[in-house]
Length: 295
Image 1 (tube, rainbow, N blue to C red):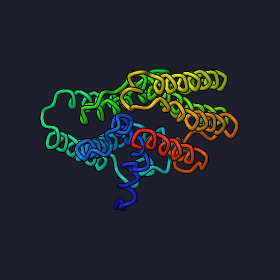
Image 2: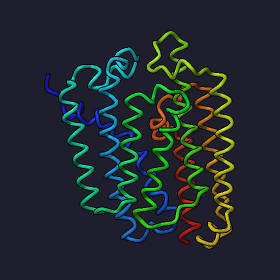
Image 3: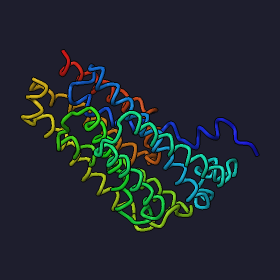
Image 4: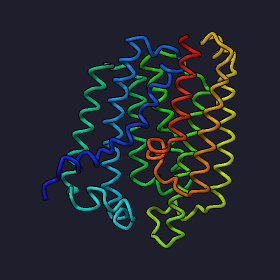
């Protein structure tokens, strides 16, 4: 069977590239998004992380092909369904690895901090694919750490100071989403489907609901503390940044409603793309933030 273009595209999971927009956070929160040099550096970082993350997705799909075949939705993935062979997928992953390494060298040379971030991301996620995904709690922390590294990449490349409160907000917020996804896996397991990984068997709905409540509150506190930080107020020259908290709180409450009431938190990217309430909150947050910073 010859893989189609859509098979290759699905293997790279372009829908997941929205996660790599986190490299723009330092530029957005640092008020430098309109600077051409900063914007180009953030775009280069975005491209590198898209290729890097896609190579990890391919490796992960190779490792999980047997388990994915038992999943009601993941069984349609190109490798699990047999449309792309293991050997071909390995070659594709190596090609993606060559591309992100080559582009990192071309754009950033031998800057040690850049290589530490992309290399650390690759090795951490390789370890995740090779076995750490089976360790409860550790699995979600690795996912969250990946987002933190994206933010740090944006700060390093654009040479912008990143607030510790922003890092904590990203860490807590992405932990929230990761646990929400685990909640969906637990629901499938309790409905009679085979657990796709060992770590799922060590979670239950009561535990995850408590974690979601805790992380939601902590994320809101971290964001509010960020907006009220004297260093941030001085950097932006405004004391009204805290007003953007309204949209963050509303979006988090909507996500909890989707996860706990509607029980469909297993596809975070689809929620971000498709839920009108969350999309509206994100747009209003962005508009309000940009007005406060740039006007």
